[in-house]
Image (cartoon, rainbow, N blue to C red; front, side, top):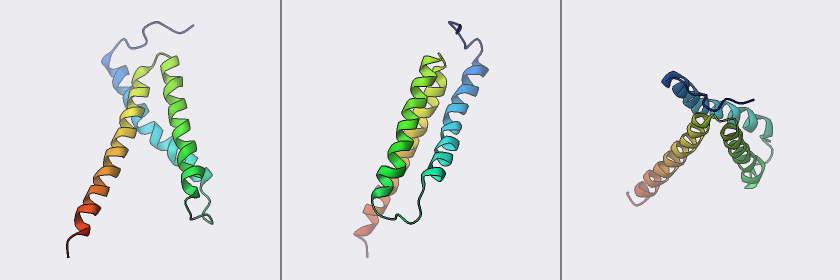
Length: 101
């Protein structure tokens, strides 16, 4: 039976957040490595690698929520938001430098 309150100290919250934030990078790296096919260099990488990785991320969030360890899922979501912001920032830098010289 799962305890009603898993987080009795702040240290458990921090450890679970770091586990979710860093663990999803390790899981995505392993899954991307297993799904990567170097002979396919077209737009198929989106459907062959990125979509399954995102599905696994969402599945991991739901599993962490069901196990009453919400800080793991918060770490996963924050990690995905950081990646999205880095991607949008790099796109903005590239687009702003296209008009110059």
